[in-house]
Image 1 (cartoon, rainbow, N blue to C red):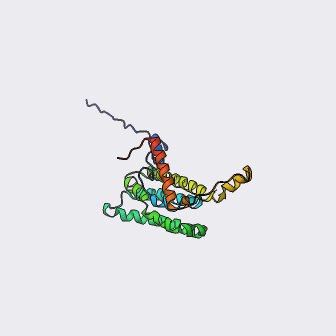
Image 2: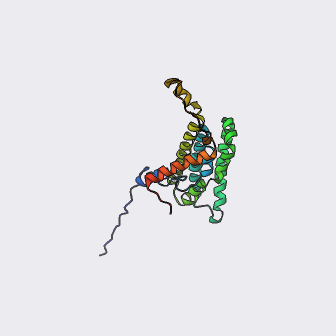
Image 3: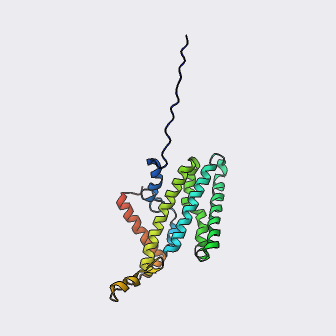
Length: 226
């Protein structure tokens, strides 16, 4: 008599949409592995577009859109892209998305388009975008790639927004174009005065603010460059 053994297949439970591992894809780039302060990527735009909050916010939203969508697209295509031409395919995808952003600004926010047109175009060569495609999207599933791209872009965005906040406040006395110093003077009285610092509207001011952010962050996290 033969004995048949039936082996039941045990299915692993599906991973939660925001499991601990997936949450780290978003949280790590915010501080511990920030693309600007830790990986030292995307420095040029952090210095160039951060004189005012409004264009910096537009730049941040643009980068988030491009990084997330390019990560998603490359992840969906990862099994069909020949290794030898992967860089060309990645550049084509990123360039297409950047063109969409540029045309959108041109159609609906022309003044902002004129102010940011050169820098929006430079997103194509932004090391953060290409770095995430090479390091993550090519080897991971679409949903994880979306989270990774969003986390990296968000880490980039909060840094440039922080730099822009201090540069506009200290250099122009305003935030999003609202005259902060004049508003405070109207409440406190004419005795209140705070001179703006012209150094903050220059690239040197951006270097100073960014350096202070890096110093505070690395002091808090204990990160040491090797």
